[in-house]
Length: 373
Image 1 (cartoon, helix red, strand yellow):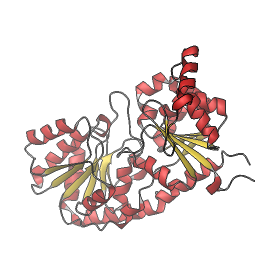
Image 2 (image 1 turned 120 degrees about the horizontal axis):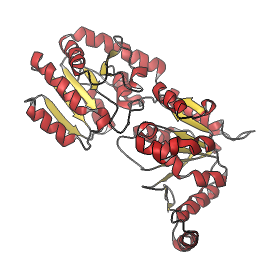
Image 3 (image 1 turned 45 degrees about the vertical axis):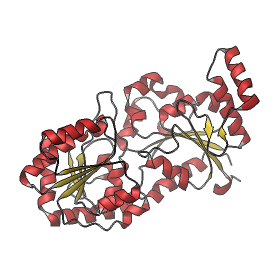
Image 4 (image 1 turned 180 degrees about the horizontal axis):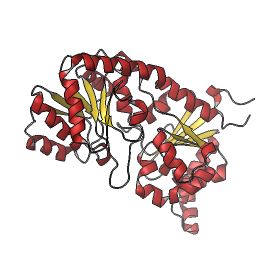
């Protein structure tokens, strides 16, 4: 018989232990029904959440000596990880992000432990990752299963040669707390959540909103997050003379975001393909907002089109079509009953098709299936 869920040892390997923008990884760590071992580290997974640094003391000296003799400076980390996986009797490794999975392939090859790779967005699209890892040919060879979060990502994976029989399409699900938001759609206010980076194009959201203000002077835009484009966006708000209409909240907790969702009429996001090829997976904030009962105005970008039903749960526009986005935002800002109808539809659709439990159940089964009976 195969191992029971509770007795299965799952190693989750990722770069960071607690990145605010990676809620989906936090969900896996906290809610997958296995005995979880978390390995993480910037550059290479050299820490274990329970044991700390993997290679210390005599083991560190020995592994570094081996690394020097072989001329492979990373070998000490590889040996440490391999030893820890064996010591903890790990049954399956879940690697968060494709490029991070590629770093540990030598360990996976030697250990023979089944590898499930979970792609999330930039790891599938950004040119630097695809070039560095030769379109993930070795990863496809070694991995048991490869999880993608949008239909667009599924097509991309197939286009670079990943095996169809290994691919698993599994959209995220919003945390259950968002189903209990008490929305008040009475104010013509909009919410944008996400890192201030090129693929999320926050500048385009701001420009579209400035056009809304021309017709609806009392309209408000709340922007949550941080990132390299934040200062540029603040200058853009000043340039468009809408400083009194836009609030930059910085990074907020899920509870704080939940509170903001109760005070706005819709969620907005103008995602685009960045110059380096980077794209979204399926933005979790789009799912969370709809779970709360908010309509969404966004672009037909990557996984957004999978989870937003145009004219039923929100509105979708082509990338860079700022005029059309402003038009739909204005419709919502001036039509309360429309916002209510779209929001109610959105909530029902998320509950029926995109719950967190559905996402976790499918990932759980994918992982269990890799353990030999």
